[in-house]
Length: 123
Image (cartoon, rainbow, N blue to C red; front, top):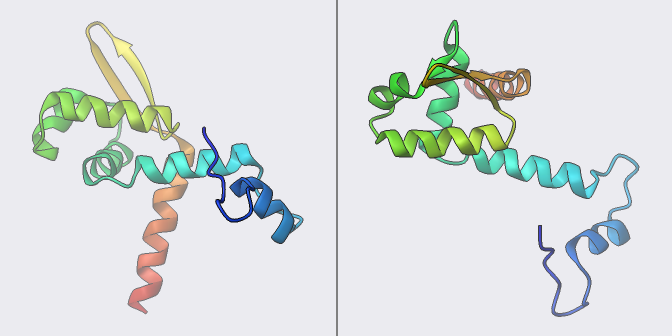
C-alpha cells in the first residue's frame, strides 16, 4: 500500500503519526491497513447489505440467493463477496458448482457494535 507523503514536511503519514501521536497503544501500519480494508469493504451499500444477509443466515448463503435480495446482477454480487472475502469478513466453501459464504466472527462482532451504537442513539 503506497504511503502519502506530505508536500510540506516530506514525511509519510506513518512517520507523522509516530512523531506526533506516540501513544503506547497506537496501531501498527498493518493493523491500520487492515482496519481501512475492513471499513472500505463495508462502505458500499451492496457489500454492507450482503454482509448483513450472510450474517443473519442460519447456514451458508449462495450467490444465487443474494442476487434477488440485493437487486443487483450476479456479477455485482460476486464482486461484493470477493471484496468481503478479501477483508476477511466472510468465509467461502465450494460445494459442486456453488459457493457458499458465511460471516466470520470478526464480521459478526463488527455488525453487533454497529447495532449497539444505533441503539445508544435511540436512548
